[in-house]
Image 1: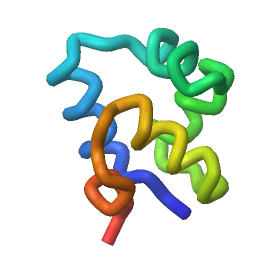
Image 2 (image 1 turned 45 degrees about the vertical axis):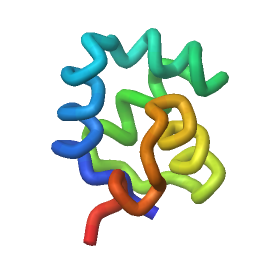
Image 3 (image 1 turned 30 degrees about the vertical axis):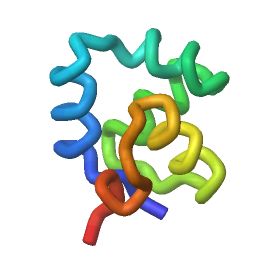
Image 4 (image 1 turned 180 degrees about the horizontal axis):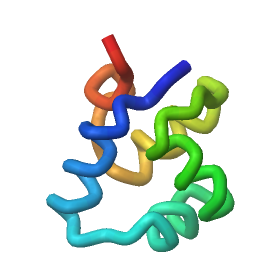
Length: 64
């Protein structure tokens, strides 16, 4: 799965949040969040954790 990096960046900006803060909320490494935000694919579980931490629907973060 791929998270749309622009949508992810927008959600982080809306919340005035850093990648490190998101990583801590998700229980993932900052490197994982950085990779996702650079356009790398990730597992469905990782996408779900990111969406949950941001309080958005998974579909709102995925590339279409």
